Length: 138
Ligand SMILES: [Zn+2]
Ligand SMILES: [Zn+2]
Ligand SMILES: [Zn+2]
Image (tube, rainbow, N blue to C red; front, side, top):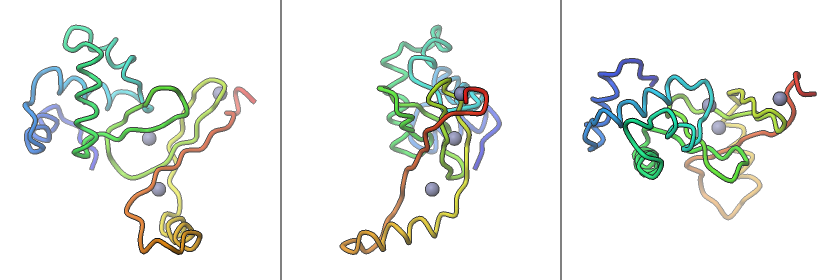
């Protein structure tokens, strides 16, 4: 579901009920250009001509609710965001902050979670990140 064109971002925003303002489209472009999940603060620095930090934060939270972006907890005090695309997880270096995207055997994970929580009939979604040390830092 990766969206590559600015036009597609504008279209996607309108489809989700947002006005496709220049700032919102730039915000999604910045998320696409970032090679890893990015914080509100870092996004606001790049978008300083278009949006202040509070506006960036509100836009991201609204986008997350409608499934345009995904909020990710990388173990910092603040959240990071990335474009919602193929479902995946992250391995994070606790020393330098390097992030790798990883895909796992999902059905097995959810079955294991259900087996461990017999009071539950199903799981709809999950979020799972891994923390360690990258080879450069090790
Ligand atoms: Zn590292
Ligand atoms: Zn990712
Ligand atoms: Zn998963």
